[in-house]
View 1 (cartoon, rainbow, N blue to C red):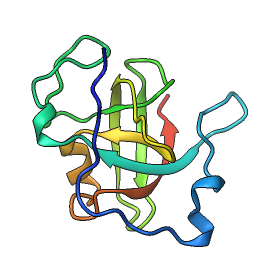
View 2: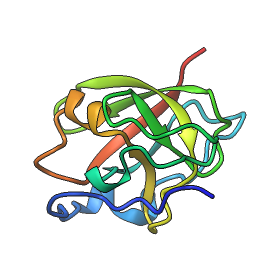
View 3: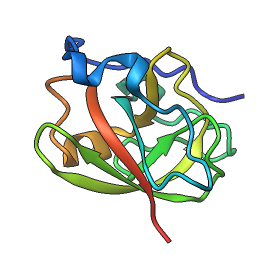
View 4: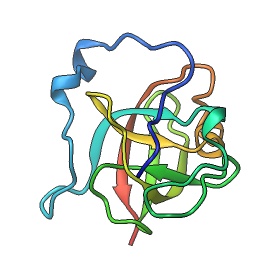
Amino acid sequence: MGLAVIGCGPQKSLSPIHSAHSFRSSLTPDSHELRGLASYYGRKFHGRRTASGEKYRRQQLTAAHRTIPFGTMVKVINLENDQSVIVRINDRGPFVKGRVIDLSYAAAKHIGMISKGIISVVLEIVD
């Protein structure tokens, strides 16, 4: 069973342009990107098993997504600062409405989201 992921830090209010209703929730053959909210795994999940069976390691660049196949590499772009990171999907989630991805702590730190907790992102599948 996958982890129940809880975002860390304060929740940011959304502008009308980035309302939860404007986000696509899954990548399709016709879409090249997915927009939505990202959160990250709390410290208490370090060492627990992910849905793929491997242990969550907060220093690795991994993430949880509801439908993207395990092992898929995904570029995550922070829309507030244009910083990006490439993560490997190894878990299922997030299970909070409006969120599209849960990042490992290392991935979240890499794109500058630790202090915010929840940010607007674009996801792109890496070929």
